[in-house]
Image (cartoon, rainbow, N blue to C red):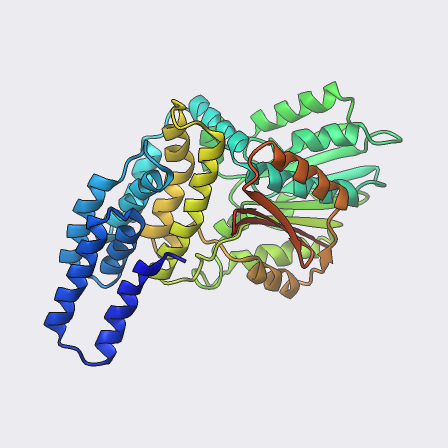
Length: 412
């Protein structure tokens, strides 16, 4: 995955197994790493530094960090920009200050109006957010096509942007729109980015629905997904229920973090309400229970693809590029690398693991709409021909070149 220079690590481990003299082994290791540095191979220097941190080799780690500081740049090539944030994560991990650095990044956040602007730019330039929302909305629209009263529970409503296109689609439905009620669950991070509470989302969506003559209600549940109980959701008889998990379930701690296992608890709670459809959109990455070093490699691989894709749609000289990446992506990267236990909230799983969790909770797959798939393919043409869309085993995968980035599927 990382080219021939990842053989450095293998050669060290092989030498240890064969009983090679430790002193000569260390000399060889230093020689190989100096060779990588001299070639300016940033990716391999990052990997070598992470290995040194993993092995608690402080001398090697500090030496490589000094070199990395000269190689990374928040305004450079994609790997240089990502490298700057990954280096920040390594420094924080070595200093056991991951939590304080993540909080520090939050303290340096811009005004909420600027943050909203950065999130909007990221949404526009990164196809996977639109892909995720479109695929989820397509499944909900299909499931609700004959329903007169629809209740949507969104476990991380954020700005409420996902529901604008769905309200418009319901407005154009033959025979007229259904009565729509949205329950928006939210945490304090989104409240900060919005510049206020959930009432802002409710007013925005109500105004939109009114302009399209769609009967609409909004219910706020200002809490994190971990706190949600069935009484917070206001389920009513006579309404067809849809539940939306878009880029949110990976934030809930599972059995590896907490005995309460909120990840599976919430799925069982949702199943107990007999929803007509449940949508899942998640990053296709494996960082939940992985040990530090393989987690670092996975993060490097995943975010390299993401930063490269941003490069195709947001010009290098764009004056807000640094702010978009720093405020919308950097904290996630630092959290994955620097934090452990309950402080590490970015805990992604591959779709195979999500499938196991949904099936354990009693769900069965809900087929995706072929019409939606075609619409998404058209959307991707406006971005870059390096994006690829694949349907496998009843799920949609959006990838950048040969790397899957986001998976989307539906359940009932």
